[in-house]
Image (tube, rainbow, N blue to C red; front, side, top):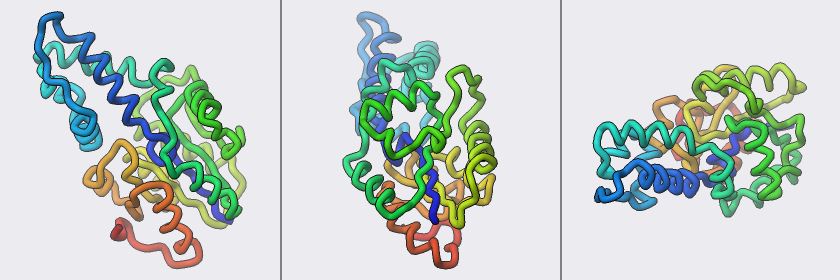
Length: 238
């Protein structure tokens, strides 16, 4: 049996609209009343985010001064994961069909996310995806968990999952960030990075995933032949 551990934001949910709405809000809150700014369009903003351009630099590119850009970066961190903005997240158009296909193949699905319990439950209920992930197959942060960094916290989640879940003949991870790759590699689990999330190909390649795919559908198409075949070397071509 194949167990597929997938991140939620990126492989399943498109978070770009939430991040862009928070960008617009923070820019409006930080700029002076009569200050002209250079509001980035969504495409340019998301390109910068996926390339890991610092928030402060995005503020500067938008016409804020140095002090304002620091305030902008802090306000963004304080706002982006708050419940009022989470409804902007929507499943990718192919996500539901791919999850149904995974279920139909008898693949065990596990979700592993840096969302807190309340944030994950909100999304699963709102977009009706809860049936794909039974409660005992959901790994996320407690509502009162004190975060450090994703690249530290996610390997801890992975270690807990490996300790709690029953053994499986084949286990794979799908994610869209360096934290997903680090979590999988910490437990010697092969990992496919997808380009449907918050990192671009250049950023993901630095962490040596086993493969980089366009999205969850393409990741599944690549993983299935590997299950009964020798594992390819990291960063097999697209």
